[in-house]
Image 1 (cartoon, rainbow, N blue to C red):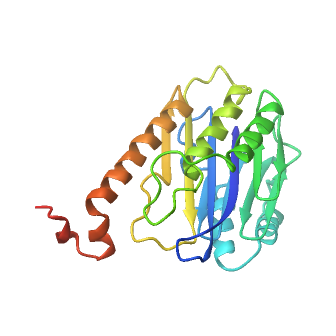
Image 2: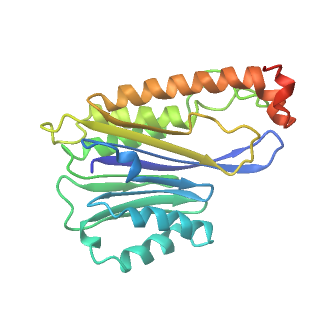
Length: 252
């Protein structure tokens, strides 16, 4: 299954507290990749692919929540997996990163591990896909803000992580992506989590496009609609949600 990216971003919330956001995004030339590959919680993000073992992702983030470091958690899962030679598994937590590509993955396959993010792929046109994905994300961490700032911030945050993950997938797709061009049905998905406790969570933080011939375009359109919905809802109901009183919105 094609290529994915997992990221960790530290930031400071409006109260001056250190927080983290985690993200994972994936696209492939099969349907419904969002049910199989990306996993995230407030402790980290994990992607499982190639010959997929969903349990690696599900238990991976459970182990992170239990306090294991990502290297220990994913190493332990692979050690107990008889099919590990056919797996790709990578992820991040608050302190570290992890990448693994089994020797029986289908070429081209490989991964890239940086300080705060990981990228991996298989059945790709070539290594350019991984590099383009990684470089697009790395550059985005320094971008100017895009779209309306979140209430309570000074407007200097970079573009929402979900948007930047889509940009990274697009860069990898344009660099070649999945080589199985005979498979026209594709899919894409993303998940973004954070340690910060918000009254009203963004509605664009967990998105899937399950079956399409244009996965990146459709995921971007879904994101933009969900982002607009979030902004509109905050404008109309934000104060009411903070006060835990939806009747204060005047909705009948």
